[in-house]
Image 1 (cartoon, rainbow, N blue to C red):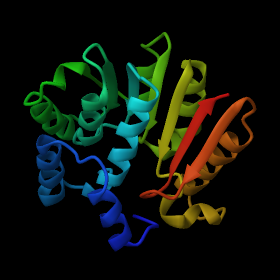
Image 2 (image 1 turned 90 degrees about the vertical axis):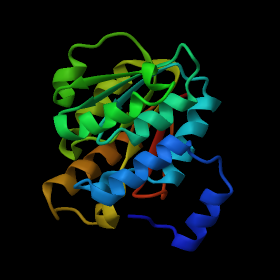
Image 3 (image 1 turned 180 degrees about the vertical axis):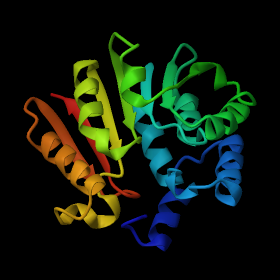
Image 4 (image 1 turned 60 degrees about the vertical axis):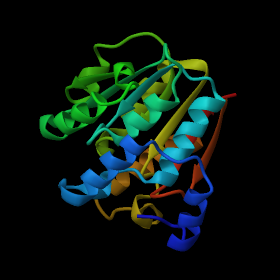
Length: 211
């Protein structure tokens, strides 16, 4: 889903830093034959993630929702050599695909996969993190946000994907997932002491930062 006309989005992608050849290979592999390929983030969103990671001098990332590992690879490529990303998912099949591509990359060593449900995996972690990318089960968005807020470093950034949910967030009561995302969005809106912006990129990117 994208709220930007395709020709405009394509122009923006062409004039942005391009993903690596391996990332492109993974993207094409996923789109060609992996079930649920609509869950793959697009090149425009990947470009924004890379930009934010570089801009904020990020070193430690948590990603909720790995899928076939494209976003994890993109973010790992933007990290410094001593950077680390912990990515969490519960699908062993798609995670196996992800690992096979990470193993081909010099940046794959920065990625640690935890194969558990999101909240269960987070319960095993502690400390502060510079960047969160939330793109897992929508009904737990508010719970993931609560955890991220408690573990966000001083200048840290939270990015939450799919926060426009095909435009369905405009209407309450459509289904549980839509209402869960609406609840999350209202929670972010009412946060005090944070700067936030909801962008109509891809299916909606909500950016949150302290201060």
